[in-house]
Amino acid sequence: MHFNSWILIAQTHGGKSFWQLLIELGPMGKSIFVLLAVMSISSWAVMISKLVQYRRAAHHGEQFLKIFRRSKRFSEVNAAADQLQGTPMVGLFQAGYAEISAQVKAHQESARTSGEPGTTFRVRSLDAVERSLRRAISTELTLLDKGTAVLATTAAAAPFIGLFGTVWGIMIAFQSIGASGSTSLAAVAPGIAEALINTAAGLAAAIPALVGFNYFGSRLRQMRGQMEDFVLEFLNLTESNFT
Image (cartoon, rainbow, N blue to C red):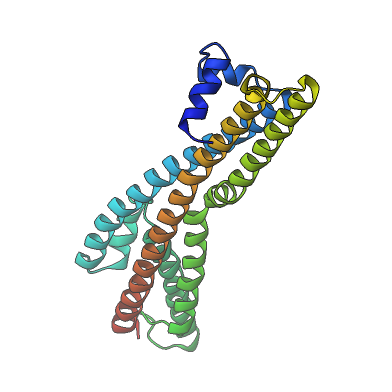
């Protein structure tokens, strides 16, 4: 159905606007349109919130890395981290710092019990520190990916829901032909209008959701790479200072 068909349908309906045609949809057509509208609004809400989240993460990440690389003590970084919670690297650092602190405390307790000097700061297992950091990566990735399932669902399901609306509208058109015994555009226009509206609504919901899902998936992979690099940097510093 091309653009001229829209013009003919509008003329048949007395030049009614899109909103007037929408109001005149049947119960099934309205239900499908409302469902697609809810899916579209939900996906846009997710995309806006994720965009804010990712921009904040990038901004805080730059500031945190500057502090991390400039500071000589992990305790200084930990104190500054509370103001930069938007970046997932803060979560990684705090997980690694907590593990180091626990191991240093255990080492000092053991040294006091055995009568050895306990003033040195040592970690017993660098592998345990790495495991803590890897667990933190999984946690942070889950938080960053939260909500994108809405985009995937909308991108995958909306075209088929719109297609169902299309089929339903064509069924109405054929019923009108059977009832009136005429194949004129006046007889089929209501059903065709319903089909076209829901087809357009399905595509309007699916296309932005698909673009958003792919975009945020790419950003997530980039941030994962940054977190992997930070883990290596953290482990190198730990090995240099605590072993």
